[in-house]
Amino acid sequence: MPLLAEVTTVSEREIRFGGVRYGFSVGHGPTSLSALTSKLESLDADRFVIVADTGLPQQQIDEIAQRVGEVAPTVVLPVLADEKAKTLDVVNFLAEQLIPTGVTRQSVVIALGGGLVGNMAGLLSALVFRGIRLVHLPTTLLAMSDSVLSLKQAVNSTVGKNHLGTFHPPAFVWNHLDFLRTLPADEIRSALCEMIKNVLGIVPDRYAEVAARLRADARYTPEDIAWFIDLCVDAKSAVMRDDPHERGDALILEYGHTIGHAAELLTGGELRHGYAIGLGMLAAARISRELGLLTEEEAAAHRELLTLNGAPRELPAGVTVEAVLRIIALDNKRGYVKGTAGTRDLILLEGLGRPHRPNGVQITQVPEAIVRLGIESISGEVA
Image 1 (cartoon, helix red, strand yellow):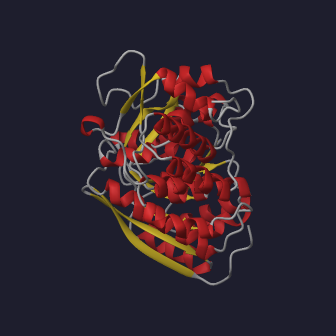
Image 2 (tube, rainbow, N blue to C red):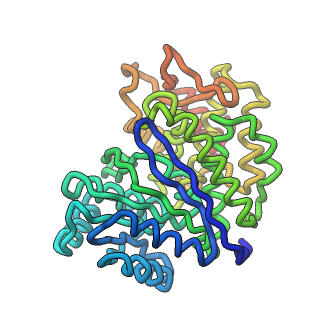
């Protein structure tokens, strides 16, 4: 990714999910961090606790800690950004370090890192004293364009992803694009898979624009990145405005996640989240074709955008169809509709931008044999 221009800019908008409102800023350049300091001062916090990704450059962590420390006493809690560390045990370990520092109900937790750190810090802030304030300072494009655009805070159980969590809104989100200077190309491509999900499931009218901007080499300008983030804000706001807990219209945000999460879990997080979701969408499109819900052209549109993005179209070696089937049997979307033996609950499309709604609910109970066909279509086997 090329170096970001030295031009300084900060744009701000308000996110509204139900009765929750919070500021969402996107900026880069020196003034962006100065404006962040002013925003933190407005919280009138007695203390800040930065939960920081250990994978970040120490200089970056120190710079943020110094700026935050100018506002109020600040402590940094390092945490490993790894799917295996995204557990209640780690959240409890963080709490054991946080509480003795003197935090109160007037304190603020700052999540400095990607989506994994954001979820751990988010759940930590939701649980300490039954809820203290949270600020997201995301350092990855996936976090900026997806995970911070949600009220969900969750960690993994020993048998599946995001089984343990709650809803806890941030006080605000500050997206400092300079953090993306050294982000690997795979991280950019992975993040844009979630944006592609938004296009396919919510705003297909943006399809041609997105197809024209996507680059397999992931070399984008700051303006491109800001454009992608803005599209994601628009799409997620459209379905979450009246569904903040993502149980109705916003369920489409889980498109591709049932099979994708299983693949991600089976690789221990080595398969990047966005890549996993892209694969899950390809499998879902194959299933929808089998059920007569999508045309061949609509299913092909999934592969086209993912190909333009340079994303993988097959499961990693060693991830078997049987293992994926076993994991999705424990998916966290079970229970929206009464279970039917021999089926799996999936979110499917019946056209680009049109979720399938049997009985008015965005959950389709698919016979396991057809689910198997969908998984086989991304496993390298003939389906």
